[in-house]
Amino acid sequence: MAEVLVVVLIIVKVAVVVAVLLFLPIPLTWIERKIAGHIQQRLGPMRVGWHGLLQPLADGLKLFTKEDHIPDEADRFLFTLAPIITLVATFSVFVALPIGEPVTIWGTEITLHLTDMNVALLYVLAIAGIDVFGVIIGGWASNSKYAVLGSLRTCAQLISYEIPMGFAVVGVVMLAQSMSLVTIVEAQADLWNVVYQPIGFLVFFIAGMAEAQRIPFDLPEAEGDLGAGYHTEYSGMRFSLFIMSEYLIMVFLSALTVILFFGGWNPLFIPLPPMVWFLLKTSFFIWLFMWFRFTFPRYRYDQLMSIGWKVLLPLSLANILISGVFLS
Amino acid sequence: MTQALRQTSQWIGWVFFRDLIDGLSLTLGYMFSKTITEQYPDREKWVPFERHRGHHFLTTDENGDLNCVACELCAKICPCDCIEVVPYEDDKGNRRPLVFDIDMARCLFCGLCEDACPADAIKLGQHYEFSSLNTEDLIVGRDALIAAPGKAVHGGKVIEASLTTTQGIQVQEKDNGRTYDWWRRIRRR
Image (cartoon, rainbow over all chains, first blue to last red; front, side, top):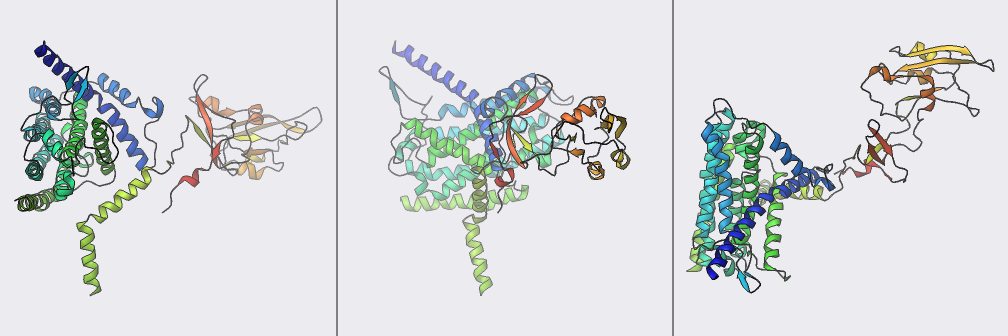
């Protein structure tokens, strides 16, 4: 009986996670467009539903009815595979993401994560790296110069940002003496990591923006110079799969920033349920991402490279050195 | 010395992302400021100033008689030749227009007819929503010109309105008296 319960619990959790992840891009697009509008003194979507709340649904319906076009010279297999790789990688990232302390429902303790791996941090960063492969393959397979240029930039960006990002989290791992995200959060019960690791946080956040391919580092899909970058040739549902994964990666990076540097579900002054605290912090970082998007211009390709290699990498290395000296 | 100081302070500002923070605080201010969007045609509608030159109208005196004496000066001065007036003698023995057609499709709303009129009979009013799918509908006759809305009395503001699509597309004003001055909402820095 107990074994059956465990299996059922996992199935239910997976179903809930998938449902939530599929639903999340809908409010996020609405919020993003609202924030964009209000920063530019506009109102954003207003006509469909109350304050345009149903606008993402209308857009989704429109995307469903669009022609699913595959270019004549495209590699059909890779072209169909690319958005799936991206989305699968994005969804699998959330497997290791804890969102709160275990809760007890009807006498059963339910942990608010699918698995508590001992190498969760490594797993999460690795899978988030695979997510970029979908982007690269998609741009390559479309056989279009803009898409290939977008993929090329993605490759360069991936290399220059994954490394500082990986180094930036080493300090956190040193502090918590563990790579499990749950242990990392528990280690921050007294004081958040951002106090110990301000440089680490800064490097991680900037590299995270590049990882999420958002302005100011949205070179792979720079609509000004590349049409739409890697998804120039995509239309209909395949396009919306890319957009969904883009939003989910943003959510993931906000959640990871909260877990690694802002104490996860540890409360700040006001005692709220742990999960509520976690969601509040995560939504703050999502808002920060969107605020940045409509404030900063896009960096040039060479500027991006020099920031990655000349600023972030030495900073993250120095961060590791300083943390090591202080810890020993 | 001062230059070195300025350079140092600039460098310190650069290290702490001063320029980025400046930009962020600007957009933050805009994010929570009032929007300047005029929700036309869903919620709001612009009432033009009194000087606005929109749809023409013919004025009448207190007895309901037309002021127009059908002198055809407006038709003469019209640069695009869009006014057609046919005079007749009414039962009181006055010269009045029998036909007063304005072709809105040709009119350029210069207001010369208003200036030329010796009887202050033809004027350009506040009405501006008379688009049509058919140019025939844009030839407006005498009775329609008498019925057309006049100059805006308290113009230069946004009033509440609602969009109705039951009989064509119409933006109807609401009479709840809620208005605001659109220009007031623009942030000047």
